[in-house]
Image (cartoon, rainbow over all chains, first blue to last red; front, side, top):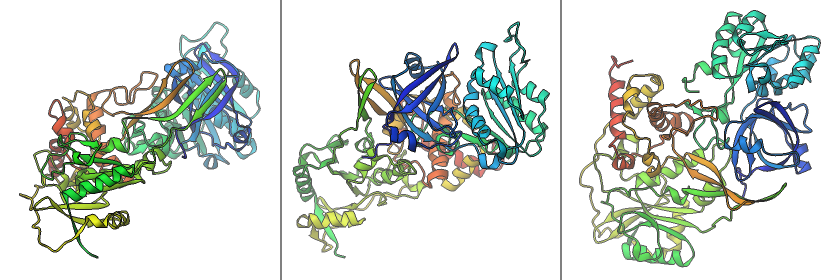
Length: 277
Length: 344
């Protein structure tokens, strides 16, 4: 039987504590052949499982240009993520995927790219950031704008420093008002405000945006004002999913299944969908 | 091609042979329920009976079924596929509103990834449908392009004749093969047995195209604020429905280091169905969940799979504890669609 619901086994190779409630797992398939044959595109997601606890859905947070491992970042929120926080290096998990569509990297080539993320929304964006950086000469100017509620809620802190130090990349990190520490040297303000302040030109530019729904909602009009075309504003949705295979019936927005037709949508696509996400 | 008739007694003999050949024979019983028969005499075919309270979907898409089993010893994990029951499933006496459900839900189980749990049962099945001589205020198969004599989903179709006889129609190659295999039980139709006429034609209630057009343009409409207002969110409608196919995936631990992951029936009327771990819920009230139910059946599934996700059997309405009647709702949509001054 070809069992689409049975996961492959992966081993936790490394665990990074990103924030008090967010961790990143570095995973490798237990079957070395699978590790070398597993192919995915930036923006796709997977179903990760702890046996006896359940499955949950996260994007793949590492870049397809670095195929020696897979990474996922998750926030402690429910039953399975709570079980995941108790796992250690060397433990075994299940993984099904990759599922869904991907960021339109071909459409982005030869253009400027602006990455905008809030909170753990940096995870899917980080995947495409490294994908773009590993093919740096195929893209024009790169801007990264990232915000979290407080300084301690910022994820991938080391990578934020790496990006800041790279030439040809503008990296702006912000925290919500009140979330700053005395020694904070970044911006203070909500992401939409900071996007307006950084004011990247929408001319010949693709924006990739992911974060809390409220952040996305208020950033879209800012990007439109900056001259971004609707189909050059790309986001990724995270509806509740179980199967990831277009069957279990819960992730739909109107006639669209987020797990199959998404999770990546352009602002143009979103405007045709009912407001139910 | 020769035309055949079959007596109820001979149908039971066929059922008996099937049971002896280790088939799972599902038929209606004296309690008017679909049941896996233990012996052929349990079979009762009554074309004039109300549709059974539950559909037969559980024989293809069980209420709960294992996706796989696991055994865990520290970091060593073994996964085992469930043992597939390879028995042939034969359904006897499916009304058109039941038989049609299988090709409809087969589409979602096969549109890209193939669900072999469903397919292994459906592919290895034979559906003997039967025309329906029942109609009540909840029935509306006629409105969805079907009819009490529609053969969609049936491999063999029975039309009741006088004296406990049935005219036999071979619908698919699988059905023809079946008739051939059990030929000794079928008699040539000499036209002697009078066919049982239906008492009256089922009425038409709405124009599906009008309903679809309205749904295409009215995701936001005051109608939805009240349409599902009295829904309790108990989901009995989904569980008795022949086409509702939503499910949950749940781990069931058996002791500390073994268990199974199961696929269990679920329903869009439950408040937790779409709730994110963050607490955000895109369908955070019953009105939105009811809109989803109606829209999934009469719009989304059509957009995606070119089928209405409803066969008009009326079970959801007959069994609803608060008498929420899907036909009334669709009729209201139909009348809104016809009215250019519809409330916006």
